[in-house]
Image (cartoon, rainbow, N blue to C red; front, top):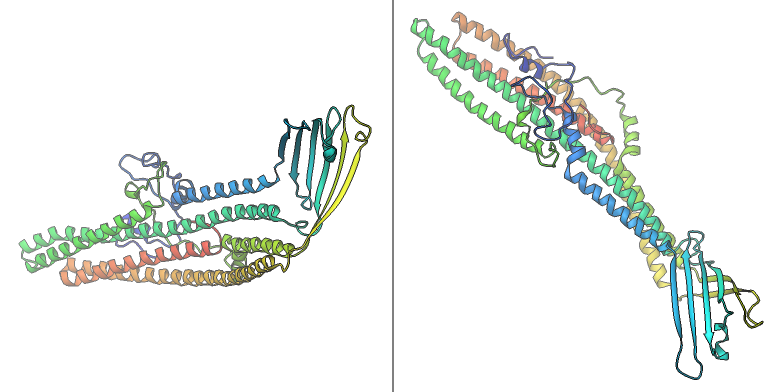
Length: 487
């Protein structure tokens, strides 16, 4: 797209403005300021690639560590919700050691709630000893005590779903949401890292252009003074060139500031093994090129893929599932509480004939709250929340489509701008080179040459910015479709 900035332009300058050139291979991921430097020739700076920055984000960024902590917390809540189904053992010992009836009873029982229709299973052992009154005859056991086992089954309320199973299901969903939230954070950080990276690369490219302009003016100074001494050029030309040098020195200072500022922004994503920000001062930027178009980019298909891949849409769907659990609980709570119980018991050892046969018992219990205001209110609340989340998810789907289409439009436009800016820079550099040749022949002056060179430098800087804008637009498009940005 662009030729070298001049016939004797730097190789780096040409690389910054090449079109459709192969991209440099990035070094291994950055780990620390010392370890981040691959083996290079003495005095040379290793090239910092986008892959290195993204690898640093994945391994060292504190916000991803915070997201990992959120996942661990969600898994803790998930484990806690499962605790409602842990078996529980209960033991009691009671009696009347002083009085007419002196006796004692030991009663132990293990109970466990199950996932099977809210059924509770239990088993126990009881031993009664002493002078047990006749009205407490059920406390009498054989010598080895009484063993029992049975189940309690909710037939209506608490059958299909209850609080413990609802909490367990919601804890499972929350754990999935925590994982997806980390994916959202990873995408956002990767996008922001790519934007900061290309800002730094562009600022470094602009510094090369401005430094070259300053070098041209300084190199011209000695020749002008020689020509003035020979009487071929007026002395005012050296003064004008000195003004040009001073002006360009100030511009270089501003360009160096931009590199420093963008490097500090990039350091928020480039970190050492201890997670500390690492400024890219010891690294060289890659050649800024206009890469080939993204392969297999088809807008309608990518919109559909974004709807499938975007983790924020999955989060919205899971949050609706959480509310749906609340709706099921509230609807179930409007039902009467009808519970069935069945058990079998058997005394072991020697004892009265009246207690040694096995026993089987069944029972029913009914409870009906009136007028069910609690359940009705909870159902109304959960239904309204479900409607709200559904509409928010519908809006989010629309926003995702707009984001993808907007990013695609910006990517296409920025690529065309980069191509146009490249042609402008080519033409401006051609004019500047021609004007320098005229100056060497004595047909021009410093004022005109400076204007031509400034126009060429501005055009080259604009071309660099245009390529960086395309790179950033492409990163936004990739993240909008739910994939990590690539070089």
